[in-house]
Length: 270
Image 1 (tube, helix red, strand yellow):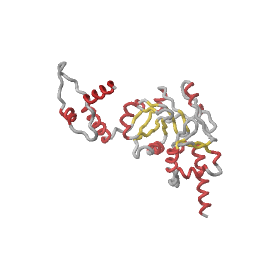
Image 2 (cartoon, one colour):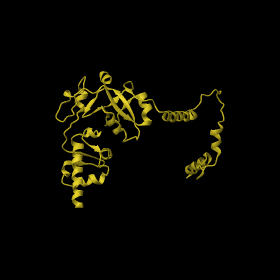
Image 3 (cartoon, helix red, strand yellow):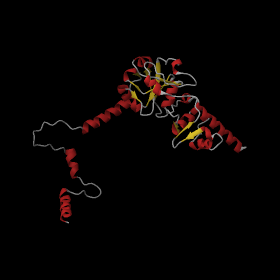
Image 4 (cartoon, one colour):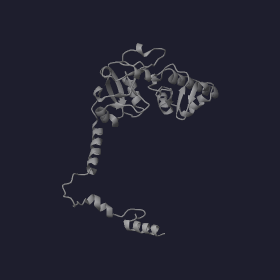
């Protein structure tokens, strides 16, 4: 009986993986790469968010890959994909066409027939990145895309995978598109390479983060060289700096210039 129940769980996980990777990755806040691969870590995080699936580990996925549905999957070292996918991404077409992007993501539909994005989209950021994003905007890393959601809950779900308390930012999607920012639809998500700061709004930076940044700036100011008013040929004594040069250090004594010169003369005399 136990063996049968175990096999039922394996089959259920197999069906779930096929649906996530091959049908609707966007429903789980996942964005595969252009070849359809999803990193195991992100996949398992998304599965854990589903009721009743928090037990799943990499070993459980390996069991699926040893079963009858093995030919449906292609695993690699740290990622996996299904070979038959109902969706397709084509950013090359989008980059070549003017105006609204013409890349394709479909369950059999061309992007030209897609619905216009909502006026406001949401994206999560880590707390420590919040002040930088508000100042400089968002830019995706190479080979990846920023994932924007029309739903706050989905944006927070994605954000909590990297920060327990992510900061939720609003993106003025219509204004951004008018200015040439390409938003690629991906099911219920929208993907983009970058978002200028002027289209981003959100809560003020927390006092804790501001204080941390202020402390960092203070430390930088302490070590930053101060402009000198000394005349050429003179020098100043920095007690904090110069005193340390004469303090004993642990470990082997560092060779002085005289000893190094003697060694050099010995080598030349050989």
